[in-house]
Length: 352
Image 1: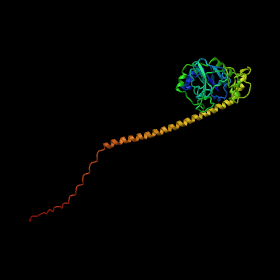
Image 2 (image 1 turned 60 degrees about the vertical axis):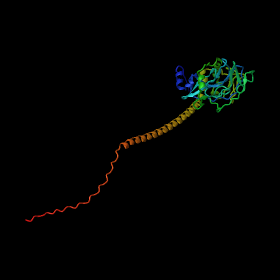
Image 3 (image 1 turned 30 degrees about the vertical axis):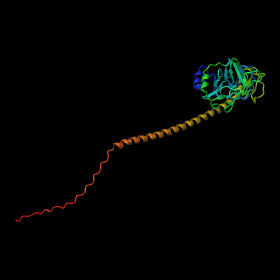
Image 4 (image 1 turned 90 degrees about the horizontal axis):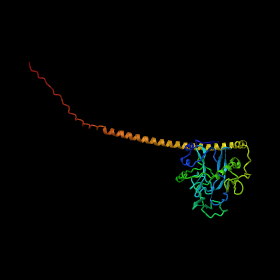
């Protein structure tokens, strides 16, 4: 279901992915099963001034061969004037590859995925930096619980169909980066801060956040602070099952994960087959379109060849007409002479 790449990864990524994604990519896995749709959840209240919202996403756990949900959370900006560009899954050449998020002066390309709360698929409408302070948009941020004066109200209108697709390419979202986003991808970056990495590890260690357990509705969809998955500020996804979300007691990894992986194998295999069938159908459609274009091109070439042949025959006929001698004029027929009567010769005989 999954392959891990190490030393050959940069070269292989350059071969598999479009040039626009290589500059910002950070990968260590490829998956042939599409990530689930994004869950619907409410944003928890902001802890304080200077925090930036980082949306939740589906990550892949190689040990259990399953996706798990990394809850959205508020993270202190590592530096003034820096914003968060979310990561995203991209489909290319039959596999799903993860493009890691990063901090930077501007928000770059994140696959067109609509993560919500200011991340509508293009840029960030949740706030902006000015004079060393982050100004928050009240229309997309939950900031009513704290005294933050650097706020404004701006309605965010999505000009695209709102959906919960969580990946770019294939049967997902078809959006390419703009020239500005390409420039941002080559600009200064900061990797996820330690709080974010600890947050990911905490989510990975909680079995309740795996797709095989929550079926796409994680009981911990968002948190007020990174790494804190219990207590106040924890928000469940809509339609999430009610259950204890504490991490399980330590068990032998092989005994705990093997039955879960086996029970999820048929479902994952079915999803993989469906995605493969869709990819094959799309490939067949493209081949048929290509054949149609080739046939049209052949007909055009044949018409051009016939026109050239006619032109060549016309050019060949023209010299023949010019070189052909003029036909001689026919003389007028001579008038027939009147028949001459033969002169009678008389022999005179001398008398003997």
